[in-house]
Amino acid sequence: MKRFITLIVLAVAIVGCGSGVSDADAQQAEATAKSMMEANRQIGMPGITNYQERRLAKTIFELRDQENLTTYAYIVNHMTGELVFIGQCIGFGLPYSVQYTNPERATWKTNRGYLKMPQADPNGLFMPQGLSATWLMMVDPKSGDARPVYVEPQIIVSPFKLH
Image 1 (tube, rainbow, N blue to C red):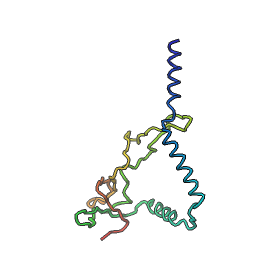
Image 2: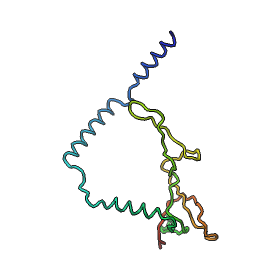
Image 3: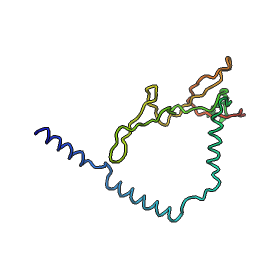
Image 4: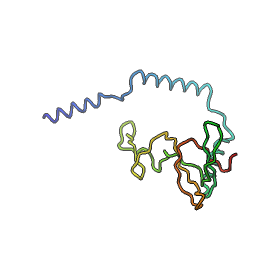
């Protein structure tokens, strides 16, 4: 009987927790949604007909997919504002925070969707968000082989040499 009463008390406590959203937050969200609906009614969507930015994004994705794309890496000398050439690369740099797998996984379904938890990459590590470091596949001047180089300062990677 004690176990049954404990379960009922626990169930009531869980149901009583609610959504965790305050009344003020819910009212602000509702007011914002109404305001955005009115803005959409008055203004509408942009009249995009050429899709130039999407066309440019497609071209950039296709160019980045070339196997032996030669690029050149530079760092910025913040004292002089000049570019300092650091080497030839293959392809463009990858941000260190890029993940091979989805950073989240669904753990269980609730009445509001799935509860998501962090998911490690195949190496078992969880990548931080917003990391500013970059991996470059730089060409070793002595051997000619491409090797990964970790770079933390801000960089510019270009498919042609910069002056």
